[in-house]
Length: 292
Ligand code: L34
Image (cartoon, rainbow, N blue to C red; front, side, top):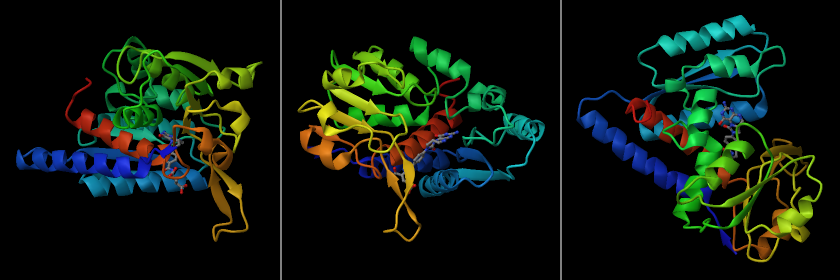
């Protein structure tokens, strides 16, 4: 079993980005600028957005954090999105999800200028991605593709089972892996809460991407010997052993599953850090006008 180290890989990519930012500065170009909108104070969102801002500093990007109370109205939020769309200094921005119930995530996402949509959540970017056209690809699936590429994991003709069909992970992941390319060219099965024979399907998988958000869902008896397992889950579960009172759990029962795997990502230190570095990669692409 080999561990896929997302932390180490993300550090290597950050160094590559930092070198490019220095080169841009040497040529008199401005630093890439990422802005993030954070609504409310969900613990996970606070952590992830803070990590994104810190990562910007590490690579030499400018960043802005725009905070709103959970009571912000949809109209106020849409107005903030409009301002960022029009702010020539901002290359890309994100609205951290989830949003409070009274705000439509769909409306807010669709209000973002696709050229600044470094999360790749806008239907225009999703549509482009599906056809294989240049697009901002959402950070988590892109981060997983980058891990598969850097660890030279063969996906061609392999059977991938993706568990979860969310717009931000499962669905784009399934499409990326079925597109032509390396990584890609895989035969993909998308499973979800209504899938009848999930265990049988997982047992046929060469590669499993677990992205359903249920801690330790994937057990050893669902995984064939030598499989590659990618764990996308990051659920905070109560714990008496940590100072914070919680610990992070993936969607994979790591202790049981890992001995059967050829490769596996840990939680933390697997997909999470790659999500953050993918956002930096997209922001660099936006600053360099590589997509649009
Ligand atoms: N708009 N909303 C928007 N864009 C995103 O890309 C996200 N996501 C998901 C939630 N909402 C979003 C994130 O940023 C999930 N996510 C995310 C980002 C980073 C990490 C996990 C999820 C991460 O860095 N995880 C660390 C542990 C961090 C901790 O200690 O809690 C890890 O090693 O897995």
